[in-house]
Image (cartoon, rainbow, N blue to C red):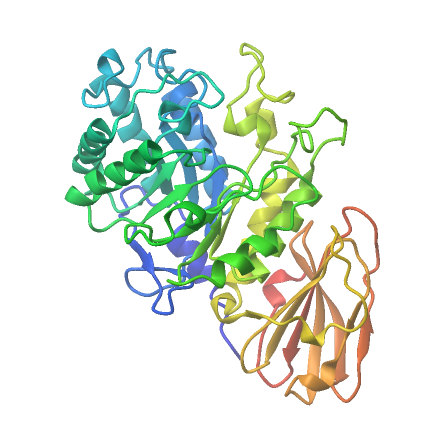
Length: 458
């Protein structure tokens, strides 16, 4: 029987250990995925907590991080110079990040708060995707700004951050912050900040968080400092997250791809349009997550409109936030992403390859679009149907004589046995529910391969 690596993965990445030092992350040998420094697969399951450092006190940080660790998250994305008046509005400790808004003068009182987050996250087995600044501080475009960066002080700021945090093993540097590069000065600022970080930190991975609908490689494809490609698929039910991954994986040089900001749970669909499309929900979260991972992403970052801004009733809501961040911790989407990580971590997920050739019949290019991924040997096939449409598969293309079939339920993380079947003919797999919110993951495994899903059964 194959030993499932789920328990080992959870122990390595999410189990609380009061003084643990997490292994550094690096790019895998095939340049497609992330692994720890000792070669173990790393599943980037992130959460967007952009305003955490700006708005939460230490007790609240503890509560938030513990919840995410318990749910199986592995990385938290947050910002030092935050979006919502992060330069001039003090944090929960009463401190602003810079003296005189000068990137070369760090306010020690504020950065002790950053230190606390990084160290507490490590205790809980969490990595931190740390943005030095939100993008409005060099390209205001919208938001409050002010623009404070030049290429010269951006390099100095990067050096200061690298000197302070290069000894922490649980970091990934994320430049950018939801902005496009619109002129040469913008490019110079980001490249200077990367150069400043690299002057003192050669160990931590570096990437770039772009504006919606873009990839990091749309701006910095040839830059050697860019270790990971990150895209923001955006807050629309019409978004085809898988297409971002496929486009990124076709590029050279090859890099791991992260969906760093997909559609958020509990946010208005296409909020920037003057129309009412309703609200995005947990089904949107799952579709974006499964589409991203089955198409070959190295990781996925969950997001919630109430949590990124740490909304509470004492604050003015941004983007129609309507649920307090503490209550929003229990929205179903974040739990469901833990289920996604659990099932993939129990399988050789970094060996999967997207293969749509086995799918028979039409496959609509809409929220019902089905994806299939298999191992090179064909002993494992995963097929995702976002709205419960039947999966009609050409099984004779698989090498196994007999398959064991299972449904994985993305809403409760449990597996249901379908049974064994021969591969001498096509077969139609029909879930027991359909419509919006009725997504299912089909698992087909070579009966002789010894995959065991007992841990996922009631």
